[in-house]
Image (cartoon, rainbow, N blue to C red; front, side, top):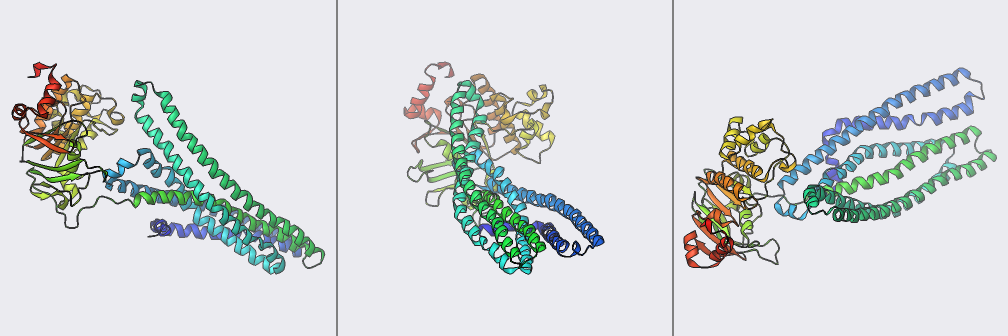
Length: 579
């Protein structure tokens, strides 16, 4: 579908209101021609023939029409904007819903601030175009056509002389429009850069303060701001050339009517009344021309914004296979069969991984950072799509590519090191694990996560606001809330990705108790740097440079004297009491 047709499709739900808006705009245009017509009759008939009562009646008629015109303008301004806002709202909902369907890879490559720009300021420009575009085009076009027809009835030669400037105006507009397109696209991109910088800086403000790097952040922002100023300078230079050139041509209209009309009046070809009518009517012609010229800037902003909206909408969403089935009655058997994976085709992260985990068993993945442990955890819920020629991952014997992604993810609970909590209340964050959960179920999940008693000490209990990303909570409290969320979800499979590595030893012990409770009866995949937390795992696999180099229980791997023993000895050489 072309960009234009996609844009027009958003008018579909507002056809009735748009039709009324266009009719009102048309009436505004037609009523605008009453004044020059009345002026012509005044100067050529009513005044010379002393038709005083007719003069008064004509004036009253014009006044009444102007009152009606005022009401029509109110309707156009108000309801026209409402149409634009509703279209903007629909686009924003479509874009947000589409973002929910995009794969992890998209968010790896796009900054949050840039995405926010497309949801907000870009779509605002589209809203303005959606409202003003049809009205400006209709009103201005009708005014130009009607004034041309009316002037032709007065004197066709003088009319053609004046309108000879139109092709020149069109040529100049097209010439400078191309430069405006490029310049405003660059300006919009630089604006997105600033938003991304602000989002990153505000999110990381505590880190900035901890390292006293406010000056560094200011310099980074200033650099983006300079790019924006430079892009704006280029955009406004192009816009200035466009406006100054086109407005000069419209000024020529007045010069032509002044000279040519004066000569025609002198020669007796037209009357003084006709000459006055020409002056009034030409202004009625010039104003819509100027409106169309000014509209070019708004049109360009709107088109640029819609293009950027379409860019994301054209991103390929996650898709289930056509014959994908729902995963039901999950036992929790997991199997990695010769799995290889690369985020970048030039650098493979995993190489021929083979793992088998029976239902209810716990497998721990250990090894140096960057070895591929977290990648394995991301592949299991299908966050990253495993290519057909890179092995297979199976749950209960079924390739996850042959299962719907939602059903796979519903059966998997994830507890990560970097806990993400949403702004809102404690109750809302726990309920995120299962939106239809009752208050009693939420409290039971909190008890099992060992955080219920703490919640009751808060003045507002479960209704306590946690702040952005849980800023009002400690690391251990946030972690226990995330565990409560998983308890509520009650998945058959559990992934613990460095769940306690960011906590102090005392808090780790408390969290570990909650995690042990959570793991009961569930197939569990654990990624851990703190090897003390996985000694009781049914099996431990050492992942090194994307390969599994050792497998066995803690005792077996210690006896083997390989990489695992080296890691364990290094980690606890000063902490013998852990033994």
